[in-house]
Length: 323
Image (cartoon, rainbow, N blue to C red; front, side, top):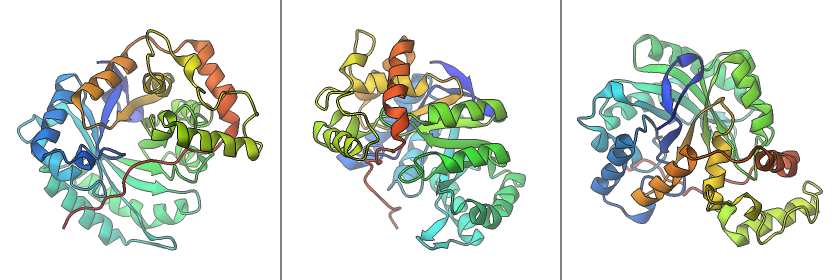
């Protein structure tokens, strides 16, 4: 495993982190038993993964993690979970709701603290209101030892220019930011990561691989739409094989190339992978630890898709905590 320092936290985190959201939801989408999910988690730990991310909204992921991590020395891994501040489109939850969610997560995860507690999916329009309402409660929880670092994840679906992340980095309030970055939405490499490096803010990359990257129907729909909107130069990539030029013996698949691209910038502390299958996990691990993408290939990704400034939508199945 390779490790990087997660910004000003000073923590040495695994370059590949284990995510429990996305399409797989730690195997829930494929009806894996909790014991099977636990085997996947333990396998990831055995391979050197020490950063694990979850959220109450990821179905029973917190419960499954609590089971999987029971008996594992707590100091050997970094655990993060989240709180969704938005009650609906026009209103926020209360600070008391945050506290209740944190306490429930700690109980479900069978731990006394989480290393990073994220405010989840915050857009630029809500940024100030979210800070005003929830930061005092977060500071209190940190002082009490319930959380070690305060995090913020962007509203990837709509914040195409990463405006919130850039503002948060400059404000210096948050220790860790979770940012979307992939081959078709690479703008963070130019806008967010250099800034995070300058301000020493930790970055965890989400959405490194999306179904759209490997699904020809979805991919064609996005490419054709961007061409119609004038965001993508017509003919610059083939709609059927837009990433074949990235493939070689070290990047045998688009997914492998995507993980390499997401990890290329040194400010990316950890890149999350979500899977239900140990073999699939091992493929992703080999990709991210293998030789990097050639510099000219990474630059071509930025030249082609950087100006698009449109994030391909997350393909996870929305799930809520089971009561």
